[in-house]
Image (cartoon, rainbow, N blue to C red; front, side):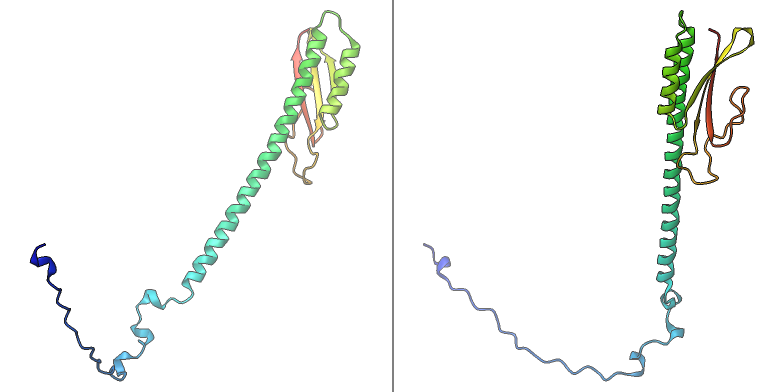
Length: 175
């Protein structure tokens, strides 16, 4: 082994701990600054509270708007579903009347299905002049709606007036 590995390390010098002087007594400049000396951005007390209040009001308004849109979308989806069912029944009535042997039992079956598939549903076949006919299906659309809020208020259903709160589908055809 070489001699350099056997050498002892010298200890680190000891540094004496000294005490610092006492802090100077408060002077006139160490007092809190007066309001005239505070910058304007810092002197606005309660500004963040107003910002938070405004943000909460904006979020509440937005949430109420989203809820209203969701309710409107649900009502319109229900109205579209009812129109689709009514068109299905009207198409079945057209197919029955175009059949080579017109069957009154099939007509009664689809008329009863209209009353079960649609709220207050009614189905009818009306013969028109010049060989044309109309398959008409009506139903109540104001089911579970607030008063005065009527979706799909039709002016007429073919030549027949439909009262407010009722929906109508009319298919004209030539048998």
